[in-house]
Amino acid sequence: MTFLFVYIRDAGHPDAGAPLADDPDRAVTDPDARLRFIRKELEFYNIPFPVLFDAGGEVERAYDAYPQRLVVVGTDGKVAYDGGRGTKGGPSDWDLEEVDNHLRAALAAGCANE
Image (cartoon, rainbow, N blue to C red; front, top):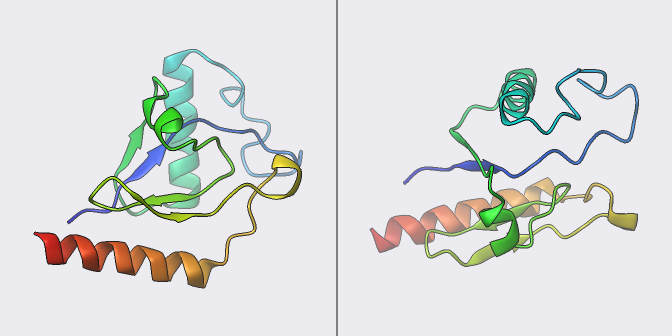
């Protein structure tokens, strides 16, 4: 079983002082620039697992996963956790303990189904 992070698209940083907010690749739609920015973000945040880029938006549409939202999808393709949208469409205030519980449950269910 593998945990994958699916990068759908960047919602931008509301705070001008946010990490990488001034990066020239942040607001560019060119695919090569988007990939450069994604790599910079992943390096900055030290993401320790594989990341897929949903360049065509299929995953975003399938799970209504507009940025600033966290959706945990089980191995069966069903949503195991939906962090929802934050107030006024901003970042969700995820309960990280709750997210951890849902991730562990999804992993356990996937392992049981293998």
